[in-house]
Amino acid sequence: MFRPFIRFLMAGLFLAVAGLAQAQSGADPKPLVDGLATADFSEAERLIGEIAATGDPRVVPALEAFAEGDLYFRKSDKLVFIGTSASGGYDLADPLTGASAGNAPRAQVTKIRVNNNLRRVIRAALGGLTLLSPDRAVRLQAADAILKAPSADNLVLVEAAIAKETDAAVKARMEEARAVSLISSDRPLAEKRQAVATIKAFGGRDAISILTQAGAAADPELKADIDAAITAIEDEQALWDMAQNVWYGLSLGSVLLLAAIGLAITFGVMGIINMAHGEMVMLGAYTTFVVQDVIRSSFPGAFEWSLAIALPLAFLVTGAVGLVIERGVIRFLYGRPLETLLATWGLSLILQQAIRTIFGPTNQEVGNPSWMSGSFPLGGMTITWNRMWIVLFSLSVFFALLVLLKRTSFGLQMRAVTQNRRMASSMGIRTPWVDAFTFALGSGIAGVAGVALSQIDNVSPNLGQSYIIDSFMVVVFGGVGNLWGTLVGALSLGILNKFLEPSVGAVLGKILVLVLIILFIQKRPRGLFALKGRAVEA
Image (tube, rainbow, N blue to C red; front, side, top):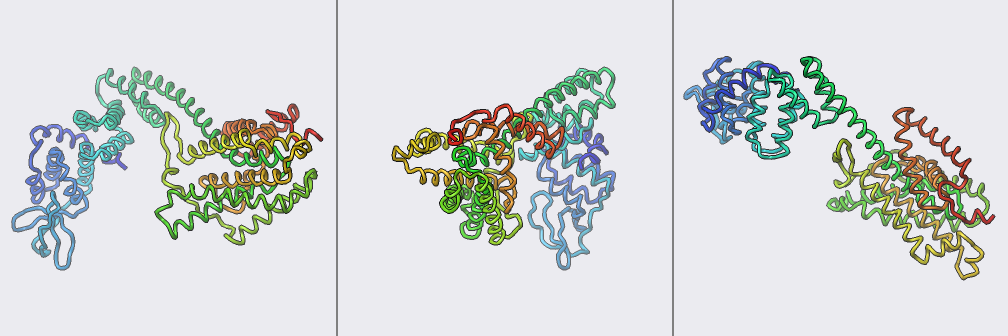
């Protein structure tokens, strides 16, 4: 949107600004604004240049009103005002201070005429004033605008702004804006080469676009520098793209880890093929929805804490459901894997239909707290906050579970039952209740995973089905019953998926991953990290 007016009449305007800057600096712009009352179009263009040259930010409302056709002069004294239509006339305001100047009948004022040519000049003048604005954000935005629309006509203005700039970040952006404008100027070759080096240091795809556009019309001597800079930036960008893919893979792997870590307990440790595990994830996500719905309606000020409230509730809700499932169904089916698979699959359908009946079949809205919204740059990558927190959260859950299994009496009992059920029972361990609470723990962790997944995926009755197959692949690939294997398997499959997707597509990529896992299991049936468990005893 800036290109038409920056490249049209910019040279004449800013040469006028530069020539008059010293004479007009600190001058009162009021007489210049009042001069617009009797000026023709040509004279108005000159006055706009002088008004902009004062550098007074108070002239911005006057110039904006002029461009909108809201500038009037009073016939009796030829003073200029910003006019707003009112009953029987106009409400007048001082063009510089905005102070009210009363009401005037229509017959006492005349609108100052403006055409498209003057509007372009006014917009260009406003752009120059924003580079000198006292507001840091406005100056930064103006420099960004020039970066997007480079032109040699900007040089005088940008260099003047750089000389006055004290903020290091804004000054660096202005230097970049100067560099992109300098390439198309008639400045000496040495300066242009320095500008190419500046843009090269700037890096990124925007720099490649700028240099490519400049290289099309550059001299042969400069074109060699531009081509070399483009090649260097592309090589660097390729490395950052690879790093970005690794990050995407890690973030996907953390999601798989959250979904699979509960399954690593129920399937890996207990040997239960739980096809309803995905529904535990889904119940955790719906718990988050209910918590946020209550907070929105009753305690809107506590929304930032909604996830902290939802986490323990989701763990308790899904843990309780898991306990009921184990006591009511699973305990009768130990040692019968096919019946367990069919029973839990039926339970998954029942849970899905129950959620559809209660909440409806459509997606539910789960909001992101402010601390999980937005993104930040890291070198040539972009990191989203929600993915960042999920990666950290999934690792926290993993290490907390590791401590529970290795450093607590419950973890000791669970490992004892896993390795030798008869011996554990003979030592006084109540193996049925260890089984029940182990299954409840796995279900509770799945519910906690649902809280996290609600921040990056649609909350619907089918949410869990999106992760159940991938979760089984992670557990089998990493090694049944081994948490470290689950971690390595999740991150490995996440990264592999993200490197395959760009070349073969998401669907074919998943198929290839599945084929590779099947081939791997042929060589290592127990996965990456084998663990002796109940299945080995048989």
